[in-house]
Length: 208
Image (cartoon, rainbow, N blue to C red; front, side, top):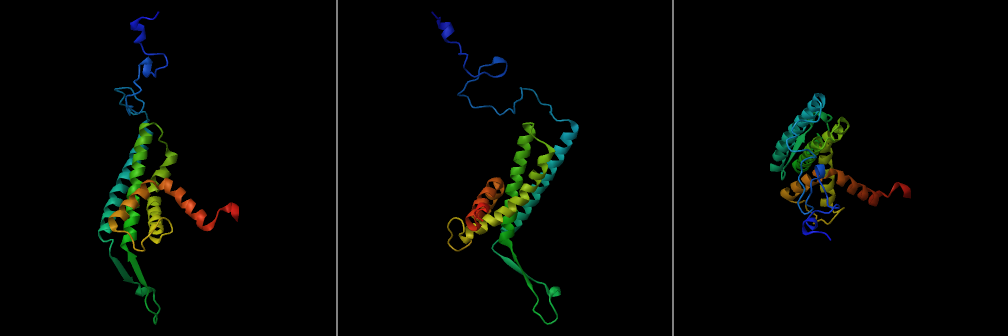
């Protein structure tokens, strides 16, 4: 017969932590990146830490740049500007006019802010989890640029009614900027959405 003391012991099937330490399954996990308490030193060699610091500095500069420029264009998003290109006109022809749409520029740069925010988050996560490597640097640095392009495309599709429903009028600046940030931040998922839209409009390669 088991004693009361034996019945109070954790069963062998209960989850255990390091060195057989009992882990309460109802306790929320601690995000320690798999490190023991007091393990503060970097696991990367000096050459890798230098590359990580360089990438962090580049992304920080991109965040400041995209944020400042997007704030400027969001402030004038309801306006536009026409620039005469007289030097490109022939002697008797009407000079061409360059129409600058500040709203579209605002959407692009706000989407870039979302993209660079995601890149910074991924850099912090991959460095802490020892998953950082140089081959993904290209992806992390190009995500903000791709995010801005995706933001312009998706907002244009939404405003035109090709995806979703549209009232025929462009959205206000604030919701447009919020959507642009989300598109830039989740640009990886948006690429799949755009693939579905392209397949619906043009058909898949298998059907051709």
